[in-house]
Image 1 (spheres, helix red, strand yellow):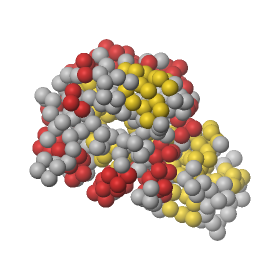
Image 2 (cartoon, rainbow, N blue to C red):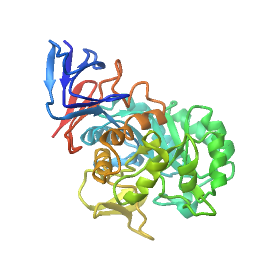
Image 3 (cartoon, rainbow, N blue to C red):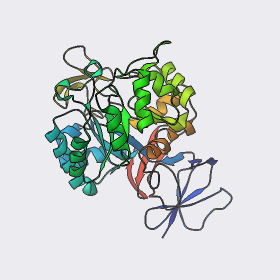
Image 4 (cartoon, rainbow, N blue to C red):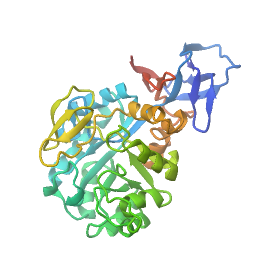
Length: 385
């Protein structure tokens, strides 16, 4: 028998409604939303003063709960998918870092073979962060694997992934970047730009060739100046591109977040975590791929060299809360940047990112302080505090 969710607020696709009832059908999909005055006679699950939003989508995440995508372990992938439910995430893109061609190919094969068996958050595709980067902005990536973009290598990875490879980041100044962007974007894969010293003109050339996203904007890219806008200026000013943003308070100063929001709006900002294996884990020593990392004081940093930030330990539910707590956006806009915008950016908005009839009933329950209370997958409660 179908049931209804009653709550104080619903963040629907095109509007936010106070009160009312949301139908969950027998097959685990969303049905109709009914206003407060239309109380149904079916079973009602009452969340009273709490809020209902779509399940969050993390399109850029390397690891969590002690596991890393680079471990190439199907059991570890499942542990990550389960842990993400504790963060309100119902869809995600396992994200690699730079590695050898064969290592990345093996990881593609493992994810493709195991994705249907994962019991937690749903795999929306694979995200490759590298290896077509520039050493100057290597971040927490190993430069020994860096190379120029090569469509043939990408096609080998995509074959191993059985078509699941959905996004790849490149540096626009690498030889062949424009040609690679044009070829790969035509296949429906998102070409993103990052870890780059590119000029504004180089970044713009890749956008004109089909690139649609900037990877963790501000971080790992040439900055903005009045004579050379650089990668940051391109991310801010080019039309119809989406900008990833890590809102943990460490990667980007809140006022810099505000500047980008003013330029792009919530419809073009994608909240990501860039989380590594130490997410949901205690402080200590960890690995990000082949690189040792120290986690302390809310950050993950490389143990050696210049102690670059090495991903984050951010939870996506904390990212939306941070934006509201920093008084930068409304709850509606914060939720959009972690649901509808990422869904549209990777082409899964036909089944995720919004509360719409016949979409899988993947949703979260928040209290008015933007704190996660519960996570539902296909209409079934899978996590609660």
